[in-house]
Length: 509
Image 1 (tube, one colour):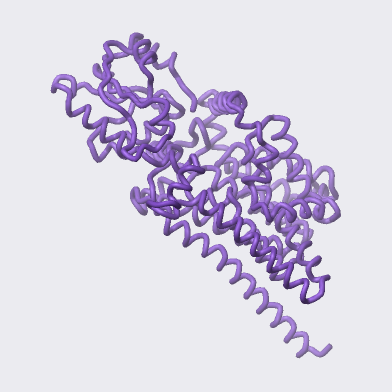
Image 2 (image 1 turned 90 degrees about the vertical axis):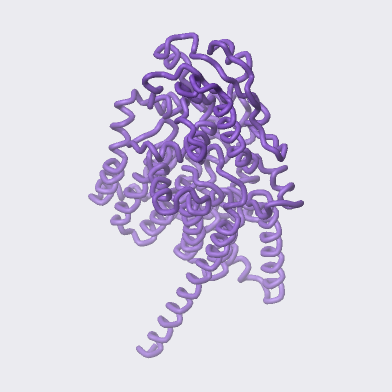
């Protein structure tokens, strides 16, 4: 072969690679634009309100999570204020990156344009990735880190270059600064290294350099946990007992098919898992799925905890599917591709209608609210703070001079702290999660507006309580606020002295 011919081939390959990359970015851009056009439709979710509240009190750790997500939201507040689209922008970018990386994984595994586009589309049109772009949650960035680490591991195994341990370690450190379930993924990585020929990386300096980098990144959070008695462990134990008791882990296996991936992607991720096990070079990736799966099953984890592992399986499955389709005749190949992508998009559109707030009114909105509890939790917060402000304004001046607002959960806490500023409400008094660590006002208020408690609780905890208003929304949407604690009370101080009250009623949520 002449040098000129080799150069022409390389130029063709480079051009094809660039075209495929542009295709992946095009698929990601479509999802990004969809989120940007719809993310302002309703309001803040209760989990977002907690993260925003913590973002105003930055530290190296928080009770329910490490500091990365509040830090990102602190940056968002500085850039965009409290714009919904702005606050959720980094989540949207993260999910766009996941889509692109999924296609790149298929490329690194030997897949061509069909495999790369299939992997990207399958991830883009799956329920969990779609949801992760609708809100800013620590799960959103955790999802990105799992996928990015898997991509780096594929590059490491393919090239047999131990230097990839360094970026793996860096992202692993970010993962531990985002969500503690990164430990399950780490268990899968270490197990996969031990039981496959990838164990040779243990003997390299780059492996230990990557490990040191990961530890250095998350060390400040480890110190914070030590100073606070590893309070997040107590939080996680409490939440796990609650989830198991409420049956939230009962459908773990069903959720792997129902929410973690598009239904049409199920054959791909199953084929991908088999493909990794059959590959001596990439077998480590199979164990990076199976070991966390076993740990979550044994520990009764919730169904979405393993969701970030599926893009890696889908990438391998897409490559295998591409080779199978290539073995068909031209007509049958076109029929198979058309049938598959039609089904994939059809199922994806159904998920989009459920997960994404496509419409501000009408049948699509009703359909989404009926099928998506998270969207219902974005409604009514402005009504809550407005009602609290009206109750405040109705009080005599002597009560308003020493007034506090006690809230029962972190959603109410964030609503009063963030949205209540427009009504000049005092900072919330909350015994939940990190707000409990921040303490109560000094001197304590003598009059309390109490939100998020039922009648029996307020009479037991506080003095002189009277019903003062109701917490709901004019649309009649049933969510946690309107269904479980719709009453708002005006009370005196707690029956216990404030230090005893604060210690006894600490809450995790």
